[in-house]
Length: 358
Image (cartoon, rainbow, N blue to C red; front, side, top):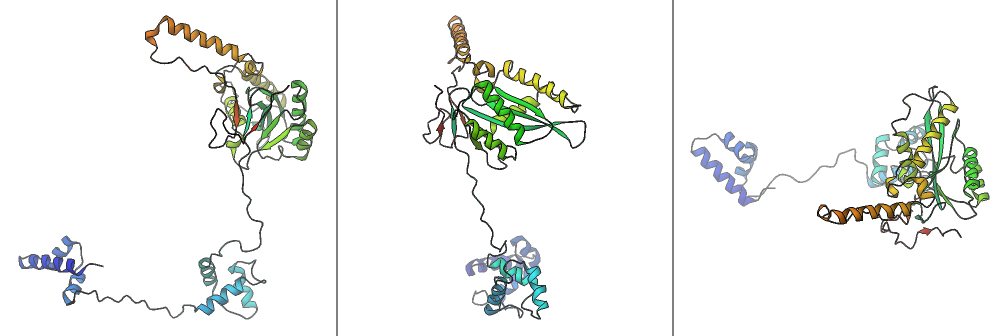
C-alpha cells in the first residue's frame, strides 16, 4: 500500500507532465502505475486507501461443526484405514452425504492427516555401522558379489570376493551360477582354513543383501567365531573397499567386451584377474605396494627403501627440492566407516579396535 505523502508526490509529477503537454497515459507508464490508480488517488481527498479489505465468505464454506464432523467420520473406527475415495461411496451406500471427496481431502490435509492414517510400524532409524579399525592382516574383511554377464539374456554369473581391508588382498574368491548364502559360507570356510583364522579374530563386513544375512551364512560365521557387520540398506558408502575393488577389476583393459560363454570361462578370467590384483597391482591406499606384499608384511621394508632413495636423491641435488620429500609414511591403521569427528589416525575411542593376534 502506497503512503499518502508518496501519492501526493507522484500526483504532482503527473500533473506537471500533463500541464506540459504530455498525455496522462504515457506519464503513468513512465511512473509504473495505472491510470485507474491515479484516478482513485485523485478522488481520495483524505489520502486514505478506500479499497475494501473485507473478504466475503463463500456461501458453500463449511462451518466449524461441519469440519469437525468430517474429521470425526474420517477418524472413526469404521473409516480410519480408508482414503476419502473409499469413504465417500461407503457413506452414499449408507444414505449419508457429509461432504465431497475433494472436501474430505482438503480438510484432512489442513489437519495434517493426509498420509497413511492406519496403524503402521513406525519407520526405524538406520544407524551407521560401528567404526572398525584394523592394524594388521586377518582382522577385518569385507565382501560383496558382482554380476558377470553371460551369453543368455537376463542370466548372470556371480563373482564372490572377500577382501582383507588392511592389506587390500583378495583372500578368497569364487564364481558361481547362482547367488546364495550357502556359496558364501563355503568361501569363508575355505578362507579360514587357509589363513588359519581363530575364533573372535575377524570382523566380516558386507552390505545388506539376502546372501549376506542369510541363515546359512550367519550360522557359518557363528561356527567360525567371526563377527558379522552389515551396511545400511541401499547405502553403498558403508562398504567402500569392496565397491572400489570391483571398480578396479572391471575397469581393467583386459575386461572382456563380450559376455562369458560359460562358468569355466568366467572362472578362468577371475583367476587371472585376482592374480594380477594381489601380486602386480600397486594399490594407492597402501602406499603403492601390492596387496600380497602388505599381507605378507613386506611393505614396511619396501617403503623404507623408497624413503632412502628419495633422501639420497635430495642430498645429491638439493637445489631440486623446495620442500620435503614425498610422503612414504607407513599406513599403520585402516578404518572402516569412521565417525565424522574421527581423524584418519584413529583418535576416536568409541571405535571397535581389533586386538593383535597373539
